Length: 144
Ligand code: DQA
Image (tube, rainbow, N blue to C red; front, side, top):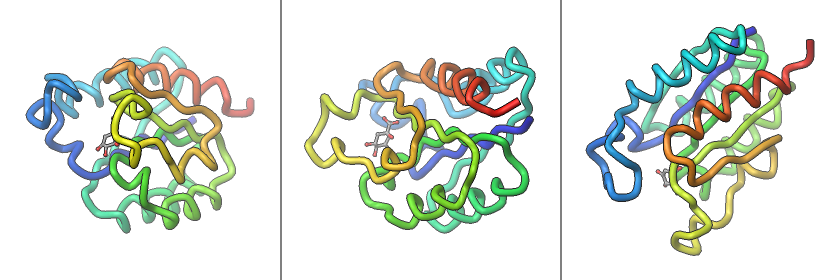
């Protein structure tokens, strides 16, 4: 079983970007955490990050054939992208949405998520540990 882990804009700067909100760990640390959680669950991962909406859409399309589940932190596209929602709606397996920060404690524009209309589970506010939780939960949701 393969899980696609997709990360949206500015997450390449994790660790350097607003560390008061997002912490000091880097995206490489996140990938290592996800690899370890996936190994525990007996799954493989494909880990991607892009600052471009179309790349995320292309990876979701690729996941239709290549993945059993998706973990996605769409970052700012969470709050703006009907196109990412539409792409996720073409995917048959489980989808878990994860945010490092507790978006509901933040600005009102972060309270709405297009992706949540498709996600089978949503995690927010657990820092990068949320990724490990998301990977183990999505693995459980994959039909045997
Ligand atoms: C984020 C929250 C979003 O509102 C923000 O635009 C991000 C990161 C998070 O992981 O907390 O870039 O998705």
